[in-house]
Length: 453
Image (tube, rainbow, N blue to C red; front, side, top):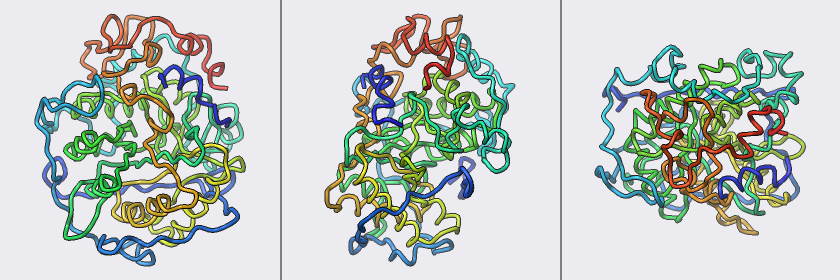
């Protein structure tokens, strides 16, 4: 992937459980470990010294960060925001009325939403006029269980098998020694901004270090922990879509992909009043069909960085939470990442997670601190900033760009709530939104493959 692989689209961009029952959702991250599947970033020359957690942080020693370690207590969010509060995003609407969960308004959590709902029927209209590649869904998103799809991975642009990307994927930061910081799978109780004695948790740590990050949130967690999402957004962090139930998107039908993206987009907008223009596929599982659906729905895919030989900038923190590796092994992977990051000509995006206490401890106790104290120093930015995309353009409602997102060219448009009322398109627009046919849209109409090479 060339360092300017996303240049064309960057130019367009302008550059307590909901039922009250305690519940910790276990999302088991299964990655293809052999063949053309996922690999860790390779070991480079030189070394990175382990920088221990600061005294008094409450983060355990690295050797103690293992599956089954005792959990800390969690407390409610420490900051609340009233309806009408102004967010730190230029042109964004005020916060809506605080979210109140109603069982009948949402699909079951952590399950692929039904595709026969009125909402999904409306969201499917957003695909009208776009050429969605006729690719058969993969068996389960893995390479080993679908050898036919794996053999054709390069043609179908399948990231899981071989790391194949297209020009519309964000895969790195353009500036060398810049880290695009992101966290997947929340909002979680360990994302919350709070202190328990001297313990530091993620938002607290980021605030103290004056750092911002991009949070890729799961719709099922958004309706479960809306106040955490509000706190992230109001603190200046970037919010992006990470699907409703965290499934391998290439294994789903078109209707199911639309449901996964649509319900998450709707949940975020209901809680925050804004609708993201970016998304990250769970497990990085994307191909040309899923890309085209995301783009047609107004969402740019954001991945993470790979080296030319296939190594991934993946901390493997999810493997610690799953009992597959130790904290020490995960941090060794991160040491390799920093070594490789110093050797490449661009910046980089790293995969980390905030769903689990262990992954947050690794971040605030070790990985972030190691990057901050590295020589030469790394610049830590949220992905929107590191790609020089104005923060306002990360949301439909505040977007000032006239070329992206782009509407379809039928009777549709963007109906974020799925209520049959078009929110953008057909004369309803943000400051920069246009219903004209920009180059990227015209290319999709002509054929998705043409724009994704």
